[in-house]
Image (cartoon, rainbow, N blue to C red):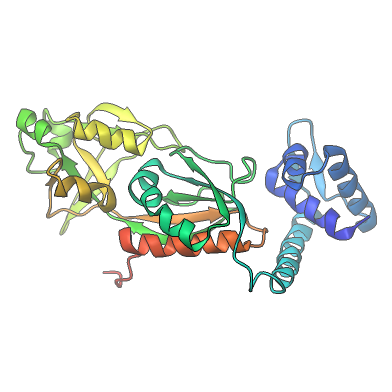
Length: 308
């Protein structure tokens, strides 16, 4: 038994929650992965994984062993990387998933710069607002707004999204200009709803002005689960939108949206790059994340002001 292969197989099974998915990411057969785990358990004289026909779960001993294995694999990868990657340009295939509006408005227009810096990186870009199984879908990293739902993944905060209310001139010509956020609940005004990928439901919005705070659900005409379609519905005059600065700015400059409730504030949302926990960051992934941080510093900079 190769102990390194066995430990790597064990860690990957834990992360993937499946022998089949782990085998796919390791480019091994499921039988080989199973045998490596069995040999590792025999050598340690403990049961590391509890297996059923439907799922794989860590035993108490396996949970402790997993923490040690993660650190050991990371240290070994770091040692290997220190000897050959420093002088070479990053290269290879990189699979990334990003929200649709960020892809269209920020990332894709900037890709010529990335390619000029790293011509040997082949970027496979998934564009969606859906929840991505980073490990099961074999994705190197994802860019997402909001809190991290899966605590087994690593999240690095690289930006901040600041939201405000907007409406198309065609909507305001038809419905009039709202002067207070409560009109979105108690009048003829309507919003465009955004369905959260994690729940499929509308998330309420809390806004405040000084000591006055309002919780809004919004009476919507249409609700969508894709950011680009959400913006398109607002531009078509279907209702009032809550948009981050980077989405609203070009529309304001072109006169396609009008800012509302400008003396009110809404909560900001962290923008995070998320990747698997125990895989050493390859040179290509390090390069992409560094470039992404630089890009977001221009479009959605981190909020460094002290809390009030």
